[in-house]
Image 1: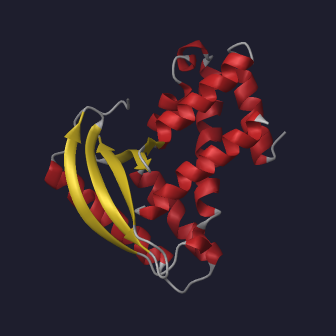
Image 2 (image 1 turned 30 degrees about the vertical axis):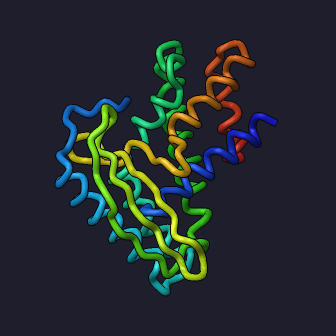
Length: 201
């Protein structure tokens, strides 16, 4: 039951990346820097998603873009919360690898749902977590939606996404905390669940 919940929440949060589609960052970019980053990253994503290449080619093109522009390790550490400090170095390393694969798999699995999209930058405001850049996402025959990407670090990266008022990483952290609380705070149980999610021994 909980594994299905983890999968659903991860996919919902990860899919939001395509709608541009606390870290260890040392500097918060200015509003102009954040908007320039989002325009460049978002433009590359849109170009791939709107291309007429095969889904497999799109997935291949998107993976390096996501790794380069999304702070996956920072998001992973945030989602584990206080349990990061209780995990062994080996568990931390394995968890980071599994989290990245779960997130990227969830994102690339939904490539076909995003075609002929357009993105318009609406606003950028500072926050303690970084610059919040709000975007309007348009798809044919569907209502436009607003998404907010939180940009932080040097170089700038996406550290969180908001959709319908909900933070992706905060929602995932809540799920992980609930799961670990029910399993005695043992990080290995979450690692095993992520392995099963990925179909790994």
